[in-house]
Amino acid sequence: MKKILIFITLALPIILMAQDLGHRNTNASHISGQDTNISTPFAAATVGWTFPFGEMGDRYFSFFNINADLGWKTIDNWLFIVDFGFQFGSNNVKKMKEYLAALYTNADNPTIVGSDGTDAGVVAYNRNLSFSIGVGKIFPMFSSNPNSGLEITLMGGILQHQIIYEATMSKVFQLEGDYRYGYDRQMRGPMAGLFVGYRHISKKAYANWFAGLQWNTAWTKMTRKYQFDLMGGDNKRYTDHMLTLKIGWMFPFFGRSSDKIYYY
Image (cartoon, rainbow, N blue to C red; front, side, top):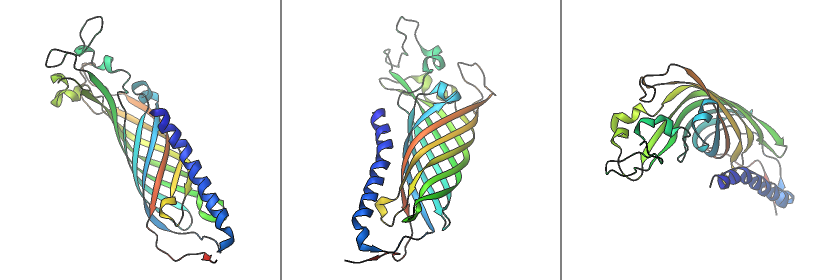
């Protein structure tokens, strides 16, 4: 599944760009005039796959990424963006047995015993929340569309990530209610990011999209005062890194007359 998502993330922008170029070439003889620079507010939805590094990489395997953006593109191709992010994995916590060591049995095949006396089937995954504000610039690559091209955007905001434990077969009372906070390793801190990719803006609603790579670095500290396996808190400052392959769909709110004259 992960390989399929990565393939889609990489291949889809190339396919869309090829379709758009083909459409331009097919209709070139029927169009007079060129697109002009536009200014417009927009919303955007983004999906991606994130590879963690640093302290986060020691804690989690890769995970899925969903973002929602509100922004404004100026007539000079500047971008101002507010971004809300949500990330989560699937049983991707590397050190679950270390964090829950006190709950595991001492058998040759250690398990966590549930309320019915059998293996509770506990899994763990990360859950991240982020908020950031960005300023970017589009550098046009095609003279026929001055609103599309290479995008470079700098982001700054805040990140929170923690571990969610889920018993899939029977309840584990030690992971219910407030007890779960003693194992979740919740972290929070400021974050900075850089996005480099391609943004395509067209008058056609379905043809507005962007794709590229985003690098984020966050400086986080534990928010919980007590973790059971540590028998205390942790006041260290950690550095978390994330590399995300992402693709997004942009929904501009412009309303204007055509800059091109179509003839047949």
